[in-house]
Length: 360
Ligand code: UD1
Image (cartoon, rainbow, N blue to C red; front, top):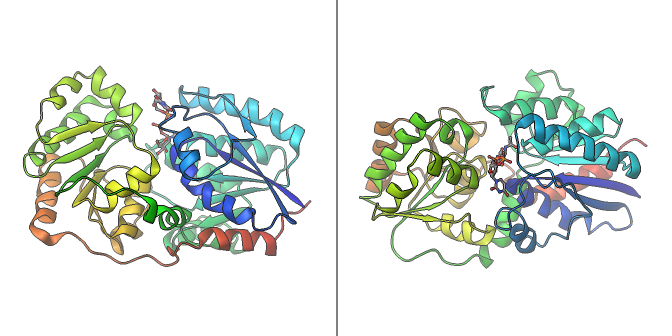
């Protein structure tokens, strides 16, 4: 029997662990899964609501990390998790995505000689000003099982010299959750609308960058009603920079609290266009066939551009508006599903673990 500790901390991790959890439970004779929540995301609408909708159990351990600088979050996780993993001595630690919780958990486990599996390995934006890029590189360097969601991620790892036997191309677990819960999602509002999400530090923490993006949204909301679920980081900055009250006056823009998973999927799936800087939303719109304009200069998910519905539009006013108008004129990308984004990635991960058990 293997004890597998799964460490999650931020909102996108919850959609990624959920399908694995379902699969683990199909092998109760071989796998004893444990769920650890670092507490990096702690608001009900960033965390607990997702556990309920994704049918995840109450975590076996909750580390109360909370918000803070990178150093503060990382240090708190190292301390708390070292204690926990030293006591528990699991056979494997599984981490997801690219947050501080992911990287800190991988480092703690590796230092304790506990094998590490990274779900969503190999993604690269080649932009080290993004905290997530540094977390991705470090997590992959520390991992024993690297589960990739697309062929370019496998190629990135091979280029970095990761031995081929550590890399397993399994597909995208985020799409497993989407496919399982899509039918249960509520309908979006009637009529045409667009959806906006923004939270990348590079976009929202710098006043001039945020002002430029908002100036594009101001034009677009006159042509298409926009719904903008506001991430807590972004809400903080909008208030700090004095934009919050002005945005309330725009008739075509509706600011709402962060949505639960089912509401988010329902809203995205019926949107005319989605403007975002989120990694997960780039993938979900590709799976849903909804045109996505990514408000960034690069993406670690290029398959959503080459095969999916995604277009990189940068952070400049003119291009954001022009690309949005193209979609409104009926020229949005249709795209196709990338390889193995078929709702069965978690099955392949668990099968791989059963075929290649962690060394005791
Ligand atoms: C983190 C991840 C990012 C991921 C995102 C999804 C890192 C480095 N980044 O960014 O990759 O895409 O989660 O949301 O790990 N806050 C709350 N309530 C919460 C959590 C946060 O109000 O439940 C506020 C706090 O003011 C905090 C800010 O949001 O300072 C940002 O949270 P933080 O944990 O630093 O990272 P995210 O920006 O959410």
